[in-house]
Length: 296
View (spheres, rainbow, N blue to C red):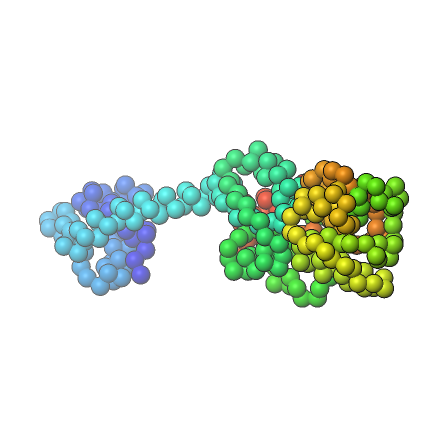
């Protein structure tokens, strides 16, 4: 294998015409130059230099290697500078995937703070609900996945680095003229006979489980992943819903009232990444900013 340090020596010899002059240019001894040239010729499997009097002359193979050496060494220098920039957060890229209510609440503040502190770091954002977002992370299609779960599923994320962000409580939504619109809190069982409007599949499944635990199966007449649509349907008097507090924060409900729901339904909001990615400076900085945004 040809090493970069040997190429630097070869180029110095070709430029100066001798081992002694190359040693002076490189700041080393003549025997060291001679030793490295022998190692390079051994790696190349052919003679690269021929002594002619007091000077060294390149063979055809030596000329070819010197011709390529400049490009190789220039590329290596550029790579070293780019890596140093990324490591120092002067540059870098982070691919973030988030569920919609996280995109509209946690992500903007986190990315604004990241840009202010590290303007050279670029972040892209794509929306996806878990478990699809987690699949994108495992497949290498993103660097951080903002995700949520209800309760703790054993082993679900054991292969990932999990950064807990906050606990998001689900709250009830009823039309303004609803009999329970003025209540501070309602039992989920008090909504047993209502028409329901359900959200994303994971939230929908959790709703059904909570309702069944309270002795009834909710009649879901509308289902949509679009939280503003859920609020619009409730506001129009077409049913009731439970939504994450983050979702309600991001859209002002028109014609709808929020009420606390008992028993409490909570979801854990987390940022996920792979163990190797967690050591990348730009990824670590983004995780830190997401934590700070969640704490505000």
